[in-house]
Length: 199
Image: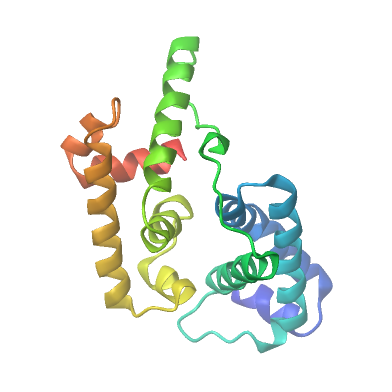
């Protein structure tokens, strides 16, 4: 990946295209979960990569990898979008991405999985923005704690504490939700595994 970035910084458009291919799905997913509107997410994601292309020569490895840098651009771009649009953020819970089907493909299991994913999405939506964001970065986008800290502009220790509080808050909310209560009762590890497969 380092070599690819260095080539892109030297003006190699094919190298930047490879970086785009490598990260487009993750960046789009991150943006979509914040705006919950397909066209807006596509437009903002395109803008993220345009900004990245224009500024790739300024990117430096200082404890931050290229994915964290792209997510930082995306996070800032979404914030700009809401500021310029003067919109109140309205996140549509019923637009939770479809669940990855687990185990049997019987209609009952698929329906069960979708209901579980919707309920988990609703529980996530009820968290504060910072709690939701750290959970998304760490367990949906599978960033390391340091990468998430870089994206959020926090120290490593502050990010670890935020993650702990966010998971505790999610666990509390899930305790009263049918279907999620058993995961919450089983502990944080069970909840983290559910996050990884359901969203």
